[in-house]
Image (cartoon, rainbow over all chains, first blue to last red; front, side, top):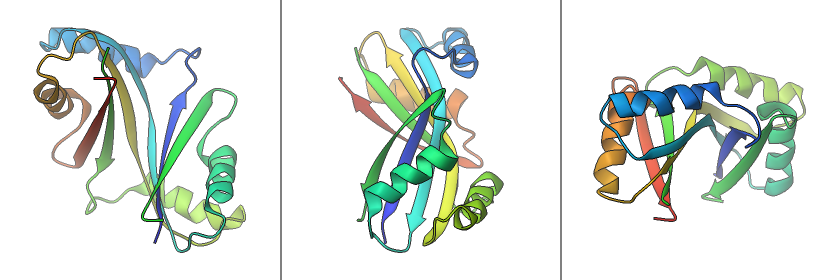
Length: 80
Length: 80
């Protein structure tokens, strides 16, 4: 059974307030040397079959999981 | 400059309503054969140096990025 890991992140040119908040919080918690933090979604999809996998995952991410105007996604397939 | 990718997911025994909502939406959008969807966070941290990297990332995730009561995390280091 294939498992697909999809990472959806805001595009680099889009401001990420959640990431910035974490970035600013880290030094006060004793974590120095952090240059940038960006936060997105990690989506794990278990599929019944591996038919036409790349096309299905791309369509799924484009249509439902990511907003292509402001987000980009990457995926990797495990157990295919 | 090391870049760390951290995936924070709800533990398997914790209900994931966001994932379930997507799981139910997929068939009506024409995506069949989806067995389970779980949604978590994907955090990308750029660090200035690679000193003591594993210990720092683990502490960071445990203290700030994940809630160890209900979440688990995995990380991978790129460009270390």
